[in-house]
Length: 184
Image 1 (spheres, rainbow, N blue to C red):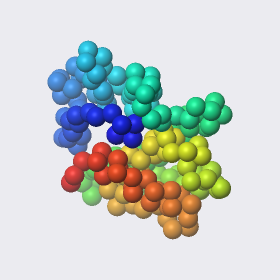
Image 2: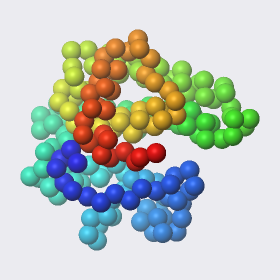
Image 3: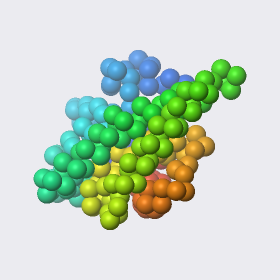
Image 4: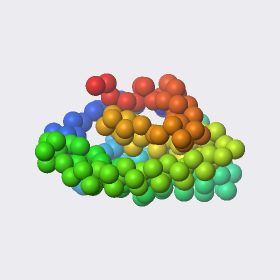
Protein backbone atom coordinates (compact mmCIF):
# COMPACT_ATOMS: atom_id res chain seq x y z
CA UNK A 1 0.00 0.00 0.00
CA UNK A 2 2.74 2.50 0.90
CA UNK A 3 4.48 1.93 -2.43
CA UNK A 4 1.27 2.15 -4.44
CA UNK A 5 0.88 -1.51 -5.38
CA UNK A 6 -2.51 -3.20 -5.13
CA UNK A 7 -2.75 -6.64 -3.56
CA UNK A 8 -5.30 -9.06 -2.16
CA UNK A 9 -4.99 -9.96 1.51
CA UNK A 10 -5.89 -13.32 3.02
CA UNK A 11 -6.09 -13.13 6.81
CA UNK A 12 -5.15 -16.24 8.76
CA UNK A 13 -6.48 -17.07 12.21
CA UNK A 14 -3.13 -17.47 13.97
CA UNK A 15 -4.49 -18.36 17.44
CA UNK A 16 -6.35 -21.30 15.90
CA UNK A 17 -3.18 -22.43 14.09
CA UNK A 18 -4.40 -21.77 10.57
CA UNK A 19 -0.81 -20.96 9.57
CA UNK A 20 0.19 -24.52 10.49
CA UNK A 21 -2.44 -26.21 8.31
CA UNK A 22 -1.26 -28.10 5.21
CA UNK A 23 -2.77 -25.51 2.85
CA UNK A 24 -0.58 -22.76 4.27
CA UNK A 25 2.50 -24.92 4.92
CA UNK A 26 2.41 -25.63 1.18
CA UNK A 27 2.96 -21.89 0.71
CA UNK A 28 5.44 -21.40 3.55
CA UNK A 29 7.00 -24.65 4.80
CA UNK A 30 7.92 -23.12 8.18
CA UNK A 31 4.32 -22.02 8.74
CA UNK A 32 5.07 -18.37 9.46
CA UNK A 33 3.43 -15.21 8.19
CA UNK A 34 3.62 -13.26 6.04
CA UNK A 35 4.00 -14.82 2.64
CA UNK A 36 3.54 -13.21 -0.75
CA UNK A 37 2.33 -15.03 -3.84
CA UNK A 38 3.23 -13.07 -6.96
CA UNK A 39 2.21 -15.19 -9.92
CA UNK A 40 4.33 -18.31 -9.67
CA UNK A 41 6.74 -16.74 -7.16
CA UNK A 42 6.32 -17.24 -3.41
CA UNK A 43 8.30 -15.01 -1.07
CA UNK A 44 8.46 -15.36 2.74
CA UNK A 45 9.45 -12.91 5.47
CA UNK A 46 8.33 -9.30 5.57
CA UNK A 47 11.79 -7.87 4.97
CA UNK A 48 12.41 -10.03 1.94
CA UNK A 49 8.90 -9.34 0.65
CA UNK A 50 9.40 -5.57 0.91
CA UNK A 51 12.77 -5.69 -0.82
CA UNK A 52 11.38 -8.02 -3.51
CA UNK A 53 8.50 -5.62 -4.21
CA UNK A 54 10.92 -2.71 -4.55
CA UNK A 55 13.03 -4.68 -6.99
CA UNK A 56 10.17 -5.90 -9.19
CA UNK A 57 8.40 -2.51 -9.07
CA UNK A 58 11.18 0.06 -9.48
CA UNK A 59 8.57 2.63 -10.49
CA UNK A 60 6.98 2.42 -7.03
CA UNK A 61 7.76 4.73 -4.12
CA UNK A 62 10.82 3.22 -2.42
CA UNK A 63 10.64 1.99 1.17
CA UNK A 64 14.41 2.08 1.55
CA UNK A 65 16.26 5.36 1.12
CA UNK A 66 18.47 5.67 -1.96
CA UNK A 67 21.29 7.20 0.09
CA UNK A 68 23.51 4.26 1.20
CA UNK A 69 24.04 5.59 4.74
CA UNK A 70 20.31 6.13 5.32
CA UNK A 71 19.59 2.80 3.63
CA UNK A 72 21.93 1.01 6.04
CA UNK A 73 20.30 2.82 8.97
CA UNK A 74 16.82 1.76 7.80
CA UNK A 75 17.98 -1.86 7.47
CA UNK A 76 19.54 -1.72 10.93
CA UNK A 77 16.21 -0.63 12.42
CA UNK A 78 14.33 -3.31 10.50
CA UNK A 79 16.76 -5.85 11.94
CA UNK A 80 16.38 -4.37 15.43
CA UNK A 81 12.61 -4.80 15.29
CA UNK A 82 12.92 -8.45 14.25
CA UNK A 83 15.95 -9.57 16.22
CA UNK A 84 15.63 -7.61 19.47
CA UNK A 85 12.21 -6.06 20.06
CA UNK A 86 10.13 -9.00 18.84
CA UNK A 87 11.76 -11.65 21.09
CA UNK A 88 11.05 -9.45 24.11
CA UNK A 89 7.44 -8.88 23.09
CA UNK A 90 6.90 -12.57 22.36
CA UNK A 91 7.57 -13.23 26.05
CA UNK A 92 4.40 -11.24 26.68
CA UNK A 93 2.38 -12.48 23.69
CA UNK A 94 2.91 -16.19 24.31
CA UNK A 95 1.95 -15.91 27.95
CA UNK A 96 -1.19 -13.80 27.56
CA UNK A 97 -2.52 -16.27 25.00
CA UNK A 98 -2.69 -18.86 27.78
CA UNK A 99 -5.59 -19.13 30.22
CA UNK A 100 -5.00 -16.67 33.05
CA UNK A 101 -4.21 -19.37 35.62
CA UNK A 102 -1.48 -20.84 33.40
CA UNK A 103 0.36 -17.62 32.64
CA UNK A 104 3.90 -17.08 33.84
CA UNK A 105 3.72 -13.54 35.23
CA UNK A 106 7.49 -13.40 35.74
CA UNK A 107 7.97 -14.06 32.03
CA UNK A 108 5.45 -11.33 31.13
CA UNK A 109 7.21 -8.90 33.48
CA UNK A 110 10.57 -9.82 31.97
CA UNK A 111 9.27 -9.11 28.47
CA UNK A 112 7.74 -5.80 29.53
CA UNK A 113 10.95 -4.72 31.27
CA UNK A 114 12.97 -5.58 28.16
CA UNK A 115 10.42 -3.75 25.98
CA UNK A 116 10.86 -0.59 28.02
CA UNK A 117 14.64 -0.82 27.56
CA UNK A 118 14.03 -1.05 23.81
CA UNK A 119 11.67 1.92 24.00
CA UNK A 120 14.36 3.96 25.76
CA UNK A 121 16.86 3.20 23.00
CA UNK A 122 14.32 3.95 20.25
CA UNK A 123 13.45 7.20 22.02
CA UNK A 124 17.10 8.25 21.82
CA UNK A 125 17.29 7.32 18.15
CA UNK A 126 14.40 9.64 17.33
CA UNK A 127 16.13 12.70 18.76
CA UNK A 128 16.00 15.33 16.03
CA UNK A 129 14.17 12.96 13.65
CA UNK A 130 10.58 12.21 12.70
CA UNK A 131 11.50 8.77 11.34
CA UNK A 132 14.24 6.30 12.20
CA UNK A 133 16.14 6.74 8.91
CA UNK A 134 15.15 10.41 8.53
CA UNK A 135 12.43 9.59 5.98
CA UNK A 136 9.48 7.27 6.37
CA UNK A 137 10.13 3.74 5.18
CA UNK A 138 11.03 0.17 6.03
CA UNK A 139 12.95 1.22 9.15
CA UNK A 140 9.65 2.48 10.57
CA UNK A 141 7.24 -0.02 9.03
CA UNK A 142 9.06 -2.93 10.66
CA UNK A 143 7.99 -1.75 14.11
CA UNK A 144 4.30 -1.41 13.27
CA UNK A 145 3.17 -5.06 13.58
CA UNK A 146 4.87 -5.74 16.93
CA UNK A 147 3.74 -2.45 18.46
CA UNK A 148 0.19 -2.82 17.13
CA UNK A 149 0.06 -6.33 18.59
CA UNK A 150 1.38 -4.99 21.88
CA UNK A 151 -1.50 -2.49 21.98
CA UNK A 152 -3.98 -5.22 21.12
CA UNK A 153 -2.60 -7.12 24.11
CA UNK A 154 -3.47 -4.16 26.34
CA UNK A 155 -0.06 -2.49 26.63
CA UNK A 156 0.93 1.02 25.61
CA UNK A 157 4.25 2.74 25.19
CA UNK A 158 4.71 4.63 28.48
CA UNK A 159 4.18 8.42 28.30
CA UNK A 160 7.78 9.14 29.32
CA UNK A 161 8.86 8.13 25.80
CA UNK A 162 7.60 11.35 24.23
CA UNK A 163 9.36 11.11 20.84
CA UNK A 164 8.52 7.44 20.45
CA UNK A 165 4.86 8.09 21.23
CA UNK A 166 4.77 10.98 18.75
CA UNK A 167 6.33 8.71 16.11
CA UNK A 168 3.83 5.93 16.93
CA UNK A 169 0.95 8.38 16.60
CA UNK A 170 2.24 9.33 13.11
CA UNK A 171 2.44 5.66 12.16
CA UNK A 172 -1.16 4.98 13.22
CA UNK A 173 -2.40 8.06 11.33
CA UNK A 174 -1.10 6.74 8.01
CA UNK A 175 -3.91 5.41 5.76
CA UNK A 176 -1.94 2.19 5.31
CA UNK A 177 -2.16 1.42 9.04
CA UNK A 178 -5.93 1.08 9.12
CA UNK A 179 -6.12 -0.52 5.70
CA UNK A 180 -3.58 -3.22 6.45
CA UNK A 181 -4.82 -4.23 9.88
CA UNK A 182 -7.51 -6.89 10.35
CA UNK A 183 -10.74 -5.78 11.94
CA UNK A 184 -11.52 -7.38 15.30
